[in-house]
Amino acid sequence: MLELDDVQHFLVSRSPALAARYEFLRFPNPRSGHAWLSTVMEKIGSAKAVAASSNSRWISVAFTWNGLRAFGVDGDALASFPEEFRLGMAARANMLGATGKNVPERWVGNLASPDLHAIVILFARDEEERERCRREHDPFRRECGVELLSSLDLAAIPPFTHPHEHFGYRDRLSEPTVEGSGFEAPPGAGEPLKAGEFFLGYPDETGLHPALPQPEVLSRNGSYIAYLQLQEHVGAFRDFLRANGNTPEEQELVAAKLMGRWRSGAPLVLAPEKDDPELGGDKQRTNDFNYRTMDPYGYACPLGAHIRRMNPRDTAHNMRRRRMIRRGGTYGPALPENAPEDGVERGVAAFVGCSSLTRQFEFAMNVWVNDPEFHELGNERDPIFGTQDGTFDMTIPKRPIRRKIKNIPAFTTTRGGAYFFLPGMRGLRFLAAGARELH
Image 1 (cartoon, one colour):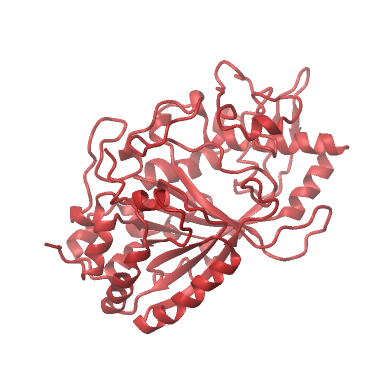
Image 2: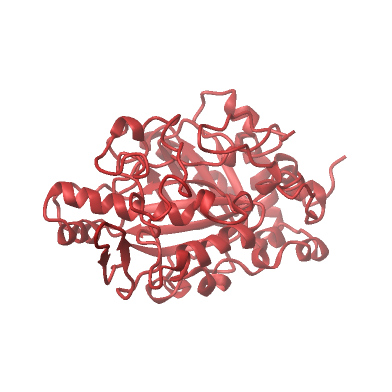
């Protein structure tokens, strides 16, 4: 059974927050980190605590490999963590598709720096409460001697009736259900996945217990999280829709074909001809479909559409070992409808949680997102979040003649990223005590 009183809430239950602040930290010496973590521990919510509370002011804390070293974790323990985590995201950037304008040398906020030791996520009910959280945390952080490398303020964008990102697509529609989490899988989601696919110390889908980094008190109930800050080029996206659709209806259909869902969230497999907002918002129906029998050739949802690449469902091998838990939110102001690009940065800051960065996150980025040969398409990448440079296509199957849109522009740019380890509550107490066993 998943130990909900020890797992940080971040990957299990969502706090009722419409705003957040990400702070990226450096610990000049172990003592500064121990003093800071010892005090903020009372505000770090376990999955059990957050589920039982209506409070929105929880925090989550995660560490880079260099951050664990800065806390005084010994060399043997540090060496027991997997290579990809030890190296960090910047060193793996080429494999992830972070090339061209996306390279680590262009990342913001010191996210590619070895000085990045930790992230603290301050959740808040709204932007006003977020500001109060910042004012309370700043003097305490400085008093402990912890350095703020950079920060990012996030907030939901209107309308607030449902979560969505700057392109206008409804978000949080297809999430894996974890065995022992207390949540039931909705129709179409399949059986709950073994906890070991996301949290260390549990059996995974093979039935085995993967070896834990040492010491166990630090790693058990922890997860790896990959962080990505993606700027969304909303003006370019809208220009593309207008260039490829003669009417607003045609433009919406192009947007749906790129994503695999209408912007309401309704999947094309279930609503191929016109949008169905009621379907999009119904979690009991909106994921109840497959590709193998309902849309094998992509006449409804193209084979290269974003959701078909990121979750191929029953058309890919070993899918139960590839799923990931996604979290995050939007930053920057919404661009008003019909307004030209205003030069203000906006986008999504997302986390992917898993038990294996290589098998889950890096595979998804390398193969599902950026492999031009995915589904034998030949010259396509994920049209929404893939690394685009104007040389790739998008194929829309259609009778009698398919449509091929050439020279897909970049709708997103990677502004930064990092690999973190999200310890359980006992692991956090171990770190706060100076990386020493507690008795």
